Length: 329
Ligand SMILES: *Cc1c(COP(=O)(O)O)cnc(C)c1O
Image (cartoon, rainbow, N blue to C red; front, side, top):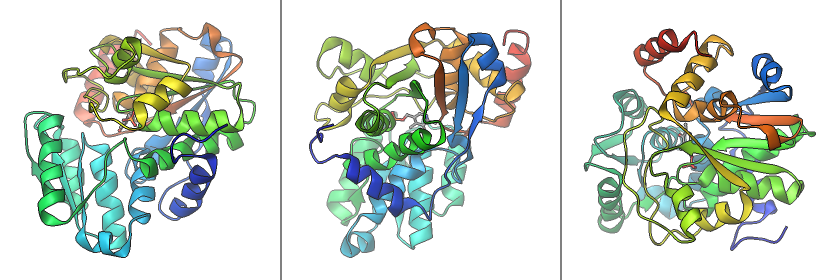
């Protein structure tokens, strides 16, 4: 496949070598429950088992390891809804680099605590992601830090693309990969990597049904500014910038379809993951499972791999949801 701007398969393959010592090649497990239900082979790619609890470690590791020595010395700054911040904090700590994470008031406290535990300077700056981003960009300008976007950065996208390279080796017969979409970094990288290697593969994104940025923008044919609703899948809502360089166009080109799941569906996905698959997932992490439970899977072929993207969830909330939905999964 042709390159997209400065992204090509070689860049994703070299990301894989670069981040190998910091990340875990996560397992793919067969889901007997979902396979039985859908009369297909369904596997789960367990990115919830990364040391930071989410795939975001891949992109953050690749982006930070690619910085110059001077940039490393100045430290890194980012805005995050949680998992990217955790990943940046983790990588920065491993490499002895200073990290500042700007978050909005909507970030749940389990994620804030995890970032602090990793030694990052966490600044709650703003009511929403837009305000927190503004603050982060100010720090970049004033303090000589390097800003690491959670998704619209070629090194982050290349890092996330390594998920697909692993799946292609683990399940070579895969017909469809499903992964959640927020800013679109994961799906941009995965879809580019997967289609470069296997052009006929189907790439399906999934997101929550309240004003999803990439979904709404693709439908409109241009970037649409959306609000930021509260969701059980707190990693999924949020805007993409007007000046988005990569992820909108990459998702538009390489992702076959983006499908929506409801809040109820996400809750069932969480409960299913815990009670049937014995996996702890957060809302966004369970979106792919939610889609399959909705049985929106007729056109996915025989062999489906669903990415479980993260596990940052409050145990209290998870157990409450699991007991509430245990008869509906
Ligand atoms: C960030 C995140 C997503 C969405 O990834 P994008 O690259 O922003 O599309 C999905 N699930 C979890 C758990 C995340 O942390």
